[in-house]
Length: 109
Length: 115
Image (cartoon, helix red, strand yellow):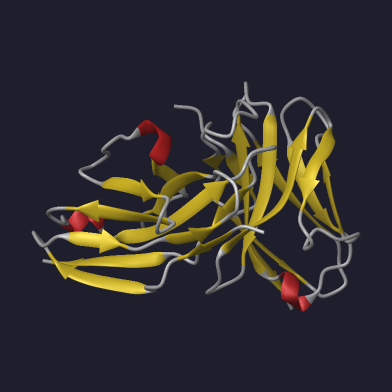
């Protein structure tokens, strides 16, 4: 069975400081990894996916298969980055998404 | 931009009562999902639905749960006899393709409170 682990429930950083939200996964096959974000009073939305190798709102995430990690990074945090961040994976089939427990990012002005 | 909508935003019910949570997926989407999030816990998959039948369901999705697409637009989740532990946020999602890299679009959720 697949599992996603986000060890930090809360991460507080100062504006302008680097951010790293940790995510590790377990799955014997080749999953697709994602980061979802939920801003206050808004719905869950996709932030980025590993297969696209994209940078969204300054965030990047690199899939490390050796360490089974998919950490989310941003060099300079902004106040508007404050939100809940969920690491997630799909394994195929009908795309069931398995979520981690989420990390609340709090950017302090 | 089209969005998934859900009604009601908050549903309060008595234990043992039936509830129906409603979702309107994005119009050209073919795959539909329900997830739930108990307060303080992670978002959990319940069921996926395609071509008018269940594609996959989790252990949580027992005989008390059912899903239906009664017309061309709505997608419903029914809980026949609610229990206290069914209190949670329920999210509907839809996507265009079974291709696993396709994005799932989430609704705003329905908060179910079972008293």
